Length: 463
Image 1 (cartoon, rainbow, N blue to C red):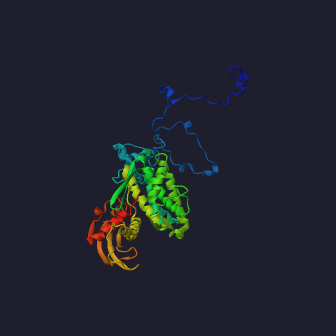
Image 2: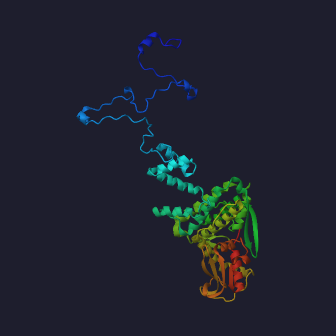
Image 3: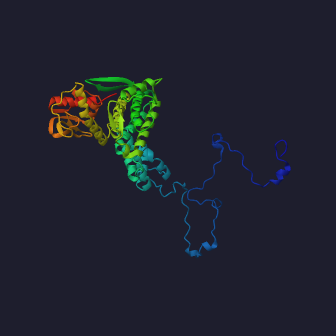
């Protein structure tokens, strides 16, 4: 190459006759299409030039010899067709327009949404009668479009997680399953966590009013969504300490009373809590479930102290599941989020726990002068005067509450009164969210006994 950038004459002689690399092509927008000569096409029905179709010959041994008279007369070539229109799937439709298979397949989505023109709709529907794969695809698309126009709620079914887990575990059981007594806590923490994932950052500061009963009156405390999660973290720490795990309130002298723990946790925060409280709470709940699962039945009866009283671990986890659901409903009301009740099986167990705690609660109110005196004391384990607690609807059942002694047995034969409540309403009463005088759907029998049972149920609530 010479210094001016052009090839020398000698080099030109050496590459003469060789194929040259074509230069860069201009963009399509830069071409003047009117000035580009168009190739001549043969008229319909005429044969193409001989040089347009090169002759292809097979090896002689692959072609058997045939006499000339056996060869059929060569017919005139058909009119020129595109590769798409030559496909057997493309056929004239009743609409009067001919569309290739790939175009009709691409129109299936628009057809399912009723977005095609009348001609396209006719062409697609005519094609579906002859093409099974496209017909199957059209049915799937129509089913999917039906989901877009549902009048039902778009929120996930609260039982979806449990149904998916049941389906998975039925195929391959867990090597170390979650104990049955921990299942309600596992389900309710997962449901609350799903709610917390959905809310915006600003909603963590939404005001939430926590309500409960003390003695004969309703009390409340105002906090935020993040404050509620801090409260759950502080009280769950009682279970962590019982299982030998780290207490979220740290070392030193830690109070056992749930209200005192909550106040200490709130006062230790140097700034208003935010979304950051979610991860420690969820990690703590996972650790509790994991530890209980590995320990199995060995820790089910381990005592968890709440200061003024104690519960076995299996009941303490049920109590925490109940509070998680109740406060999940408080948060849902604050941020306008739909929140359903627990499953019937889990709700039934929560009601059963409250019913088992009622005799001791009535005895405590009696010692405080808030309930009538015992009328018929019996020996421990003997049937005593009872109230028939009939829980209707979701998670319902029948319980007989001993009135005069916590050690007595509830007995249908010694029933002096009957009270009927809805299952969710009974739990709201036990959470201190409704008044005892407004809770009962039906009452019959000893009015004083009914009043003692209803107010004792409300006294189970706490911060």
